[in-house]
Image 1 (spheres, rainbow, N blue to C red):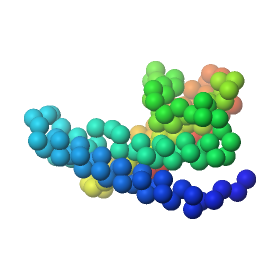
Image 2: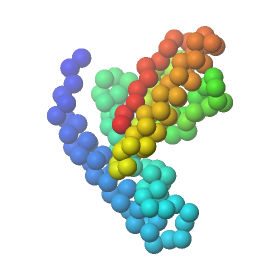
Image 3: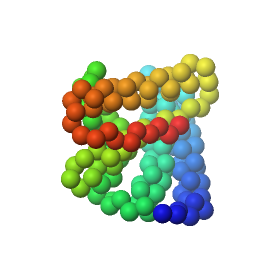
Length: 149
């Protein structure tokens, strides 16, 4: 199946704008309030920055023929092996309830050194946890695992 990549340019542009607008709004709100998040931390912990990229993933999935009711972007808790559950950003689950794809979205802005290590280590640990759970429990076929940074 051939996909017209140009079709996604407006969605990508919108996702990038949403990211920066959301991040800047969260940083601005934190500066005006008396919260425990300091510096740019509220822009990291506030969530919603990557929602535009979730919309992009959903649109691509739909365009390649995956039914909308097989796409999950909220409350995606999957059991692990080393920890009880992990909430993933994007799942594709077949109509017969088989996990097909698991995707985590992360962003990296500023403070490259330690933050990049954290952004790398967390999804790698989550992947090891998920693969170990599948290997040890033999519950189904291995899903596709993805990381979008």
